[in-house]
Image 1 (cartoon, rainbow, N blue to C red):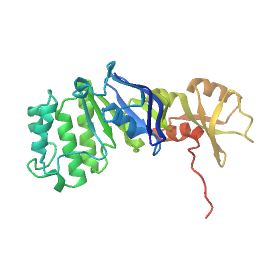
Image 2: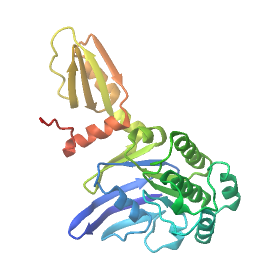
Image 3: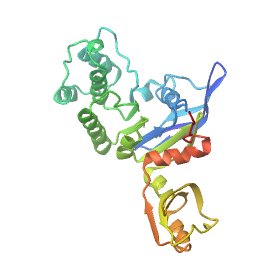
Image 4: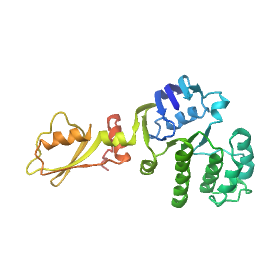
Length: 298
């Protein structure tokens, strides 16, 4: 549906994107995660046609996005800093959006008045950050986009409104087949809504898989032995280990069932596999990229 291939972008000698390749499946909620400076926002600006790549491709259904009005009419986006005309109200911005997006729904716009408690005749610049973010969602959802691209989308919203916005987005995914790409540092929230995940670092996409596959291929084990810890089978790829009392905790990469069978051969008193959170997967996958929590003696 939405893809980048070997995407390269350089700013004044700094290589912000270094061959980034990713695929966002149609109808998926794709979570794009990575440390600060990984290139997430730069990728998003290419996907929305704001930046032109130095090399590589940015494609929507196989067609380039750059300078392609037909592709851009299918894409709506909400950035971390949402742009609007300084003197405009929500109603006036709705007229602008309606002139750009042929599928803009006036009927939906009126229905959304019952969802977002905002005065659509008031100037947007006089609203709080959270109210401006609500206005951005109000307008973007009325565009009826095929693809919705979000950068830190619910930052500034209160918990009730966050839940309301996610509910609206997921309804569009299930009922209209909308494709959603979300970049956020709130991994706990992404875990509840995403079905695919891409992890970026240093301008590259290190991996992208379905969330269920990621959770199946990285396993957290809690093991108790009768005596001292035995040598683990060499086939067990341990990413991290710790011990509290007699409980040994291992983060292991590989197939869950195969790992459990191999670990059972060490004759444990207790062996339990626990699903990893997206945050844990991110930390341990990034461990190979020198992204570990370091202890500093003060």
